[in-house]
Image (cartoon, rainbow, N blue to C red; front, side):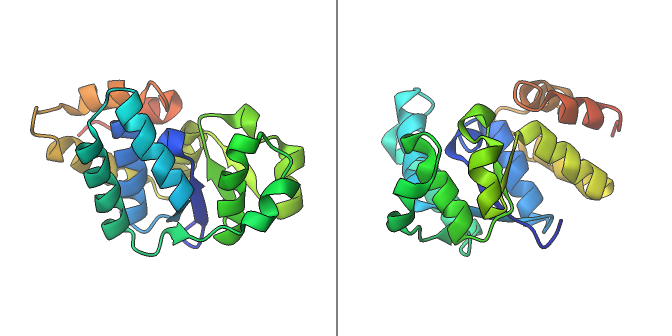
Length: 184
C-alpha cells in the first residue's frame, strides 16, 4: 500500500480526529494523499459553515496540510468533468483521482461514487473505516503507533486514547474497535 496514491474527499478531512489519523498515516508513509484545490476549498467552506472554526482557523488548517504534504495537490483537468458519471458536485473528486493517478477515493459518501462510474478509470471508493482497517492489515504496528501518538499529542484539552477512539468510532467504528484490541 506504500505506493498507493489516495484521494481524500473533503468530507473525511473535516472531522478533526478522522482527518488527523488519515494524515498521520500518510506521514508514516503508509500511502500518499492526494487532493485538489477544489477539495481544499470545500474543506475550508464546510469547516466555517458547520461552525467548527472561523475562516482564519480553516485557512490555518489548510495551510498546514499543504505544508505537510507539499506533493499532495493535483491540478484537475476541467475538460474531464462533463464526462464523469457522478453527481456534478462530486465530479471534481473523481477528476482529482484521475489527475493524481489514485487508485482509491476515501469518502464518507460512498453512494456518490458508484462502481460503474469509477471502474472505467481504475478507481474505487472506500469508506474511511474500510481504508483504515486496510492500513491496519497492511501495517498493524505502524497504525497502532499512529493512534497512540495522536492521542499523546492531544493536550489542549488532553484526550485519552479511549476518548480518541470514541471520537474515531463515529466515522471508523471497525478501525476504532481494532485499535481498542491493542491497549497501550
